[in-house]
Every structure is written in structure tokens, then in C-alpha cells.
Amino acid sequence: MLNVHSRLQRHKGVADPLEVVAGEISHESILLCLDEFMVNDVADALILNRLFKHLFCNGVILVATSNRAPDNLYERGLQRDLFLPFISTLKERCIIHEIGSSVDYRRRTSAEEGFYFIQNGTSDFLMQRFKELIGEHIARPQEVEVVMGRRLEVPLGANGCAYFPFEELCDKPLGAADYFGLCKNFHTLALDGVPIFGLHNRTAAYRFVTLVDVMYENKARLMCTAEGTPFEILERIITIADAQYVAPRTSSRSRKNDDFDLCVDNELGFAKDRTISRLTEMNSKEYLEQHSEMIANKWFEVSRNEAKNENAVHA
Image 1 (tube, rainbow, N blue to C red):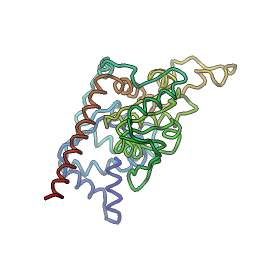
Image 2: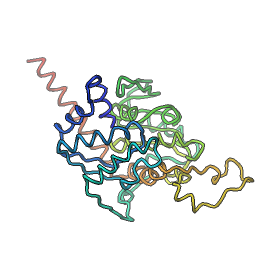
Image 3: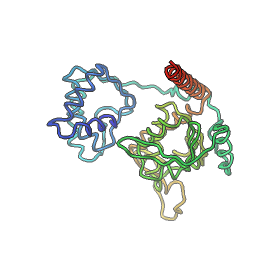
Image 4: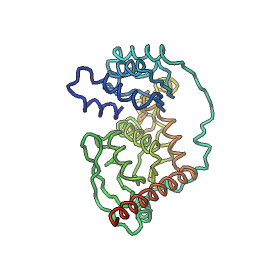
């Protein structure tokens, strides 16, 4: 959707820019596969119906996976009545298969605690591991460019590795575009101080979930310190359906009590299991080996291109 919005910006002033964008996409690809399809942004919701009508008319085939059935997409979203025609279009054009499994295959990898540190006082250890990863390079503050000319400040960066205190990356008004820009420039992120999420820091939880999704899709490596395991940091996030089974709170409980800090949020609740699963896989031996292989291939490609350019200059 970031790609669609960028294209729309380029075609401002056209009578129907969505038709132009749909034409570009359908010219590039006849098959569109969307993994983890979800809608939680009003701007996306308002254009999806017209966009996909154009795509379907152009013969594009859609294959998508989602944690939500079509009828539950964009549930309780702003101006959802304007989004409902898209659900009808989706159900008319696509065959829906419900795939149920109690096995989370991402958790079947051999997870290790090599890059996820839970103990107190591990910030210094995280910085030490960060310095080991950058080797002889010197870490300095940097700026990286993200979509539409925006720039993201990186507290420390070197040799493809970036270091952030949690607050700098998830307590500031950042989003998927910023995290994509980060992953384009850095293959490893050291994140210090991931908290237990609850009602008091729900917005930060949204950003953290988005960050994990973007890093996972880019096969980036996450090294972090946290107040708990992946399950523990998201344990207080529950859906509306789950809230019905939670014991009522009493006024005598302190504000720091776990029950008082429960966050009832359907979007986060649905993303919770996916995030726990991805964090677990991202710390597995298999994932880290894939990451190392990806970095080695990139390094080889860069070296080969540099050699080609050098030979061309000599020629």
C-alpha cells in the first residue's frame, strides 16, 4: 500500500489516478500475492475497492493470506461503511478457503537466546555485541532516506548495523515507511529496552508490531534487550472476545497491577500471535543462517559490481 500511495503522488492531477496506478500494476504483474493481508488504515480502506475493481477488470489474479475472514477486515474502522463494498467485491471475485491448524511451524525452528536478552542490566552487553558486529568500523549518528523524501535519524550506525533505544524507534511518530527505509540501509538492528506492553503504551506496541513485520519480511536480524520473553511482553494485549473471559477488575488494585494494565484491542490482539511467532523464528538458528547467507550474497554482488566498474574504467 505504501507503493500504491507513492504511485498516486506521481499521478496527481490525472482524472482517475487509481485507474492509472492499477494499469501500471497489472502491466507489471498478472498475479498478485499478498501475505498477511490486513486493513487498519482509513486511507487504504477508502481506495481499496476502486483499486481492486480496476485490477480485477484488467485480469489480475489475487492470492492472499489473512488472519481475518473477509467479513472481519477493517473491523470497527473509521468510515467502515465506505469499505464494505470492497468486501463484497472480494467475496464475489475470490474463492475463500479457511485454513485451520494448531501447529505454528515458525516455532518449530531451533530457537536460541543468542540475540534476545531478557536479564536486567543487559544494555551494556547489547552495546558490546553491537560493537562486535560492526568490527573495526566506527558507529556514528546517521540519517537515512525513507519514502517521499522523509529522513530518519539513526542514533548509531555502521557496517550495516543500527542501534536504537526503544523509545527512539517506537515512541516517536514513525511508521512502516520509516522502518522499510531503515531495513534498506541496515541489515541488523540492536534495540535496547523493549518493555512489557499494555494499555499505557498501546501506541508503542502498534509500532513495535509493525517494526517486527517489516524486519521479518526483509529478513533483517534483530538483537534486543527486553523485559520479558516474546510471549511475556505481549501477554497483556487481548482481543474483545478474550476480554469476556478475564475476571473483572476491582478498584482496590494498584495502577501497576497486570490486570489493570490489560489492553483490549482487536488489531493488536490479532497481531499478537503472529508477532510472538515471528520474534521466536527471528531468533532461531535457521533464520540467522538465512540472514548470514543473504548478507554474504549481497556482499558478493557489491564486490562483483565494483570489480566490473573498475575494469570498465581501466578499459
